[in-house]
Every structure is written in C-alpha cells, then in structure tokens.
Length: 114
Image (cartoon, rainbow, N blue to C red; front, side):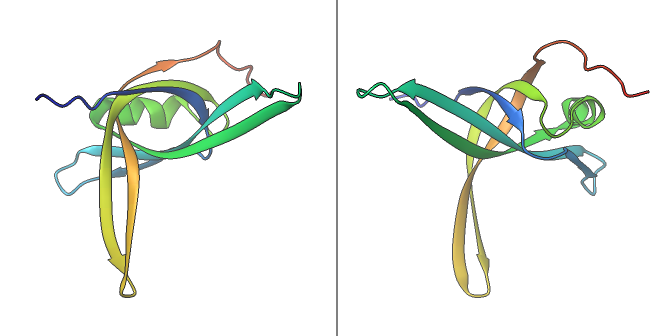
C-alpha cells in the first residue's frame, strides 16, 4: 500500500521568519504558523480553535520568505509533515514540523510606513 504525506494550510506567521544557512550554504528559514478554525456551536455561540505549527523552508524559497514575510502576514503553504525527536536534559521530546515545498502570497502588498 502506498503512503501519501501532503499538507495544505493557510494561516498567519506567528513570528518573523528566521533565516540561517547550513554548512553547505543552503538557506533555511524557520517560522511559526497559526491556523484558525471558527464554527457555530449547536447553541448558536461561536467556537474557535487555533493550531500552531512549526514550518521550515529551504533554498530559494527560504530566501524569498525571509525577504517578503513578517509576523502577522498571511501565507498559503503546501508541504509534508516531518516528525522530529530529540533529548534535552535526559527528557525525550518530539514535534511535528511542516517542511514547506511551495507557498503563495495571500492578499495585496501592505502599505509601507512613511
């Protein structure tokens, strides 16, 4: 049986993208993404939940996101999920991260401050 790991999300950056480079000069950007879900409950009140997910982008896409995006900007991302495991102070941790393979700008260009 084949497997399929593909995710599409639209949300807002929770912090400015952080650009770094690997030892082989590959650009890497990390940023947080908040995805909101709103619905109407059976009693008519509004429900809301927010999903926070860590994202990572490589190469030219990383440089573009670093240059044109900042905290609060909306973005449409497509990629794959990656499970990361690590140990810190003897305690095991894990986190699911979205490896962004494609992205789209959402909305128009923001007005620049004068």
